[in-house]
Length: 358
Image 1 (spheres, rainbow, N blue to C red):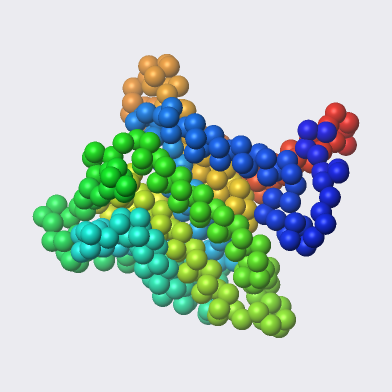
Image 2 (image 1 turned 90 degrees about the horizontal axis):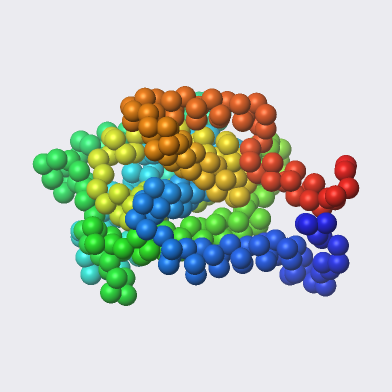
């Protein structure tokens, strides 16, 4: 009753193949975009942007990228943190070498550079898969972190080994550097995550997405029916790395402003993004957003309750936060292995028939 499909007729293939073929879904999508673009920028402050919105939006892009590779194409990757580092260092070098070019172009170019690196490290997927491919991408993670630590050219021979984002403006408004307003940083990340979600959604619904899913389900059968494994796997690595590189560039340039590769883009980052897509749901763009929201908002909520509400010491609250989040992940995966996206599908099925039981 609340979620209705009855009477929503289509008269053309174009209408039937829309991203949101159900009218209720389209209206809900437009409503969320209206709130995100027209209302939130005028209501947020520095705390909400830095603690909630920027991490959520940036991790959502990274989760979309990893979900394309792991959820849609079935190629397990533990190198997400390393590929985010490629995006961060690429945008830093571009910003310092070409200061007259818009930083938004630099962010996109950083994604393109990361896509090339992803294809290079995706070559082992043509011969190995599963656990062995995961180990190969883990080696890529360690190699990339070591490379950015040991080669001074990447951090412009800085004595500290850190990289810091110089101030850049767009339409006269700073969007990187310490003078950046909260709403400006939020809108930059929101535009990128919206475009990323639209592109990813259409890619996964097209012929390329069907090739990825065929490789995921059974690569030998896919090759027999005419799917080229080389093109499908490498394109998945390229598209995935592009989105992950975008998130790394935004993470450095817009969110943090200064990073040290070993601390910010270590193996913990790779596991964090992997947990996001597992909790949200593999093979689902919505699941990427749901998983990112879960793992960004839950620690913030627990910290406010334990430290702000109960007055516990910060170090004790941090340890309990890890335990609670880890325990919830285990319980959640036992209760619903297909993630939050499956819970949303079940909810929609129930709303179709409410108030009648089924």
